[in-house]
Length: 424
Ligand code: ATP
Ligand code: MG
Image (cartoon, rainbow, N blue to C red; front, side, top):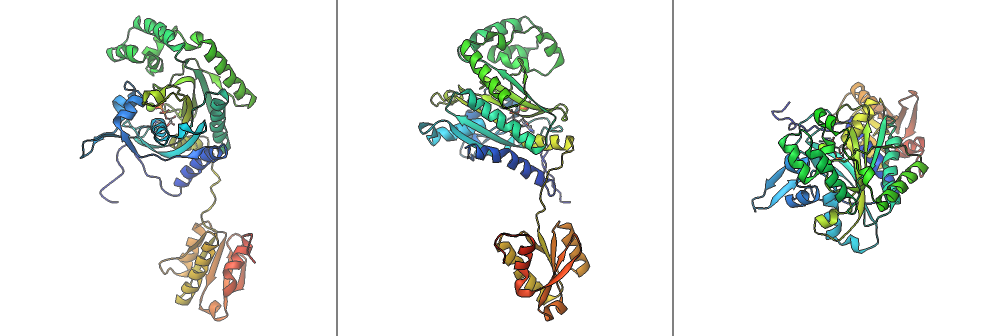
């Protein structure tokens, strides 16, 4: 061990477990690519002000969880705590919103929040996200929800649930907000929470404390205050999800922690994760662009937590079908065999075959152990006597069957066994 370890609230991804993370990222992003989402990558840090305005100055993320820093040049920056504000900022900066709409983007990366570390809650975590910018269409909301639900299902998850709500819009939310504020002012709440009533009363509904929740049983609900436009929009989203056979639960109390959501709001929760049950969430954020100084740009998106998705897979005992990284492993005995087999491995790799080699001048026994551990189906074995006869041994590590093949044909013989299309 060195004298250093990963900082509190962080952990390293190490083989073989790291393969699950890659598989989860791939399973979530592949359907997005097939649905017309283009890849976007933004910096790991942004101006603090982007998040203060875009995520909301009163949110936990901005008030408590952001890693901020002042550069030597005096810029106030923050490590990104989430992806949406940055992706929208990047799209506006590149003028994507002046082209064909919606602009559909996906991303994958690390996010940083100064939180109290617990199982499933880290200070550095990983998300895959998707955003569809510049269109107000219930089918777009439904598309995103379906893509997320299908990704979880494809991974083999079963014990997840989709919670769905509508948060209204600029037409109906103000009246609801006032009604909620009036109700909340009559409750027995601490000073911080009372302050929140003025700034963002909806978030009080999201308070996890029991003595707060107990007082909220009769709180007015957005559901009962939706305007006609929001009601019909939400009904269409629900119908499209039903038609796609994506089960959901109407949750009139779902609000989520970010300030920018309007209309469709959803969260995926998993029942095997304990307190940190949210594996992903998102919704419509029609006002966000204007909040960060852009034009009106109604949009919808989500972010799925990769760490918690991996934990959910483990909780359900799902073993991902992660293919072995190596198809063939070369085991040379002696200097000449090292040169011959190293050349064969290079040739195989150039033809796209996953090949590895017993490095470090190991003896035959140890080298065969490495071959078996690699998960390779075949070993290419050669010693002095084989080479004197102009052959190498191609060994099937499953059956133990071994055949001699001419040195010059070693690589093509492996490829033929592996059913490579162009092997002769
Ligand atoms: P929570 O209510 O658990 O704090 P959140 O509402 O803050 O979640 P979002 O901002 O919506 O989470 O982020 C989307 C997803 O990212 C979450 O559903 C979760 O899976 C994951 N996530 C968020 N914060 C963390 C964290 N600190 N550690 C690990 N995963 C996280
Ligand atoms: Mg949070």
